[in-house]
Image (tube, rainbow, N blue to C red; front, side):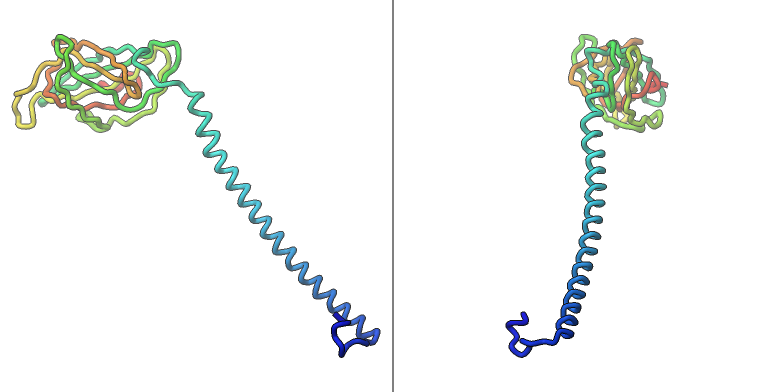
Length: 217
């Protein structure tokens, strides 16, 4: 730089020393400033990346992939026995209760609503219009996630009407039995309804599965 500047070819020793000190100070200040910014940015980026990456991995990978295989499988019709808990009626409506017992040697899991179909005395299908509800004529019936041990039961209830919407009994009949599909299954169970069957008018409300026999009260 000094050689390219014709007007400053010869400098005194004092001036040269002063100039060298000035250039060194400027370079040191610039280098220190850049180092501080880089350190701050790297630290923030590293902390943010590490925290976010760890949270995402913990929330999605272990929970999503390891809990399902280790838990019990769904309660299947082939490992369940259905029983009748009873029926009662008042003010033009009837309540029926049913239980499903785990007959296997292992725990199973169930949640939600069973599928239902009324049957005649010959086992044929009757017109059935089910409505799933968590609040029927007897009160609230919340959805529970249920683990059923071997020999234990879960239950559900039905409410039928004894008259159609226009107050007539036309189209109503007596159901001699019920076909049930457990939640999360496609296979069926059948049971005869004792006490001369259940008088019904096609429409029925269905509760979700409840622990033990608590659905029917």
